[in-house]
Image (cartoon, rainbow, N blue to C red; front, side, top):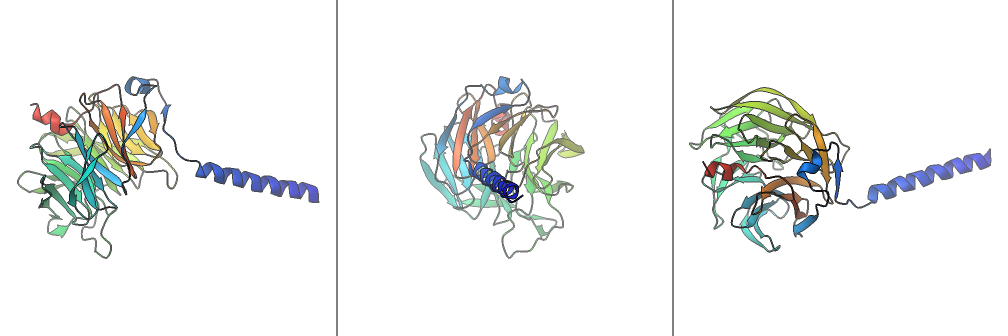
Length: 323
């Protein structure tokens, strides 16, 4: 009996040690296909390359056709201009900058969490507040922003980065529209923690993910800047520390690339999970870019990576400029 008990205890300890070692195992880049269509988008021989290292926590990548990226660093509290050879230069020092985009006039727009505002940044490092309130109450902490088909800016406003010591004034975490005249309109307040957002290339669908519920919602988008018929598009379940749905981008064919547990989940327009790009560091956001528009630039914790794909990305501010 003692021998059996000792053996059982030994096996239990060994199993626990093995599990702990597995948990400590460093993450690696890999491609996991759920459906064959995945390989039409991501080459089997695709390689992940680092563009920039040594950041605190990267977010808000924006591709400029001149051949560089803007990258937010939420820990170093700066927005950088990152060249493709890895050189970076400070654009502005700003408390907890988050998601960013270009507007229709090719001006840099950022979700400034500490300011609780949507701001426009000039190349010389100055900024202008475009909006910081809804119906007289301060935003929570704007998180991500995208240019809409109508030229307006659309953004999420969760409490994820609400500055310490400050009070939440709005009773909900909303998704908003900001027009060129500074008018702010609430689109929906049904999400628990809205985060990433994106439009379909034809401008008829509007996607928003919910980090708390770990799902992606889709809405019908209407020309006057309203949405309807919100429903669950897909779910990205995972354990604590695995990552949650965050940044979203689409390719020209309407496939979604959503950061989530382990890496970037790829979905087709019908809500089928095609596969996952497993990342060595947890990604928070991504952007299309490169000379052909087929390169995914990925902000993942302390680094910025790039991955060449077999498809062309949908970049709203470049798409609009061609009209």
